[in-house]
Image (tube, rainbow, N blue to C red; front, side, top):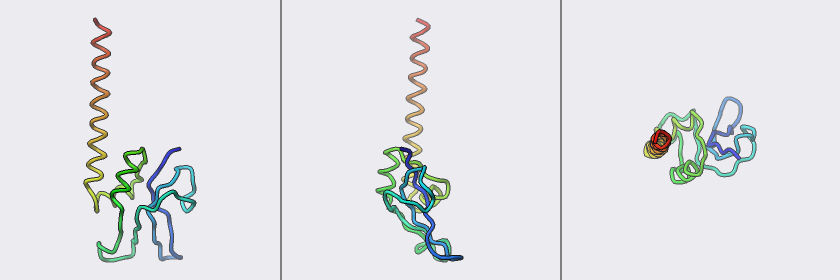
Length: 111
């Protein structure tokens, strides 16, 4: 099952309000979700009242393989940049390890 952290549209006509949720990537935009991780109100003027996120739960789900959508990633980057930095550092470490394994295999094949 592929997990995504994305926005679920709420509100009424011309007054959108979004919930940031963890869901299966195959479920519809406004369908069932597994966990509520925050909310976003694009019509609010002040930045403090515009959105709220649960950074601990987002970090937990990202560590367990969930993927952020572009808009949610930008919101997380605004409010909790340390979460995005941790994800990027983990990805860099993974790529470095893969490069090292490939290099070791090449040297072992030559010998």
